[in-house]
Length: 69
Image 1 (cartoon, rainbow, N blue to C red):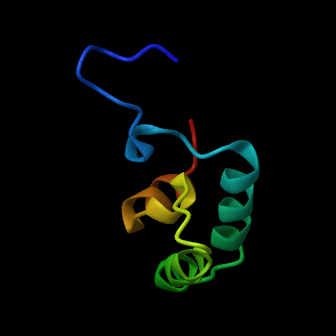
Image 2: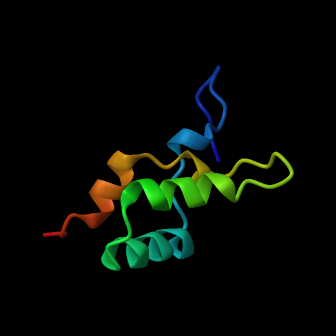
C-alpha cells in the first residue's frame, strides 16, 4: 500500500473486511442495541491487539443500518 510522505497506515482509515461487516449487519438486523454491539466488540480485544473492528463507533453502526440506494 502506498503512503503519502509523512503518513502511515492508520487503523482508523481502513475499511472493515467483508466478514466483519456482514457480522455487524446481522447484529444490527437482529435489533441488538448499538451500545451492546460496541461493548461486545471492545471486550473482544485480546493480547492488547487492536484491529479495525475495535474502533467502530455508533456512527458506523448507523451507517451500516441505513438502507443503500
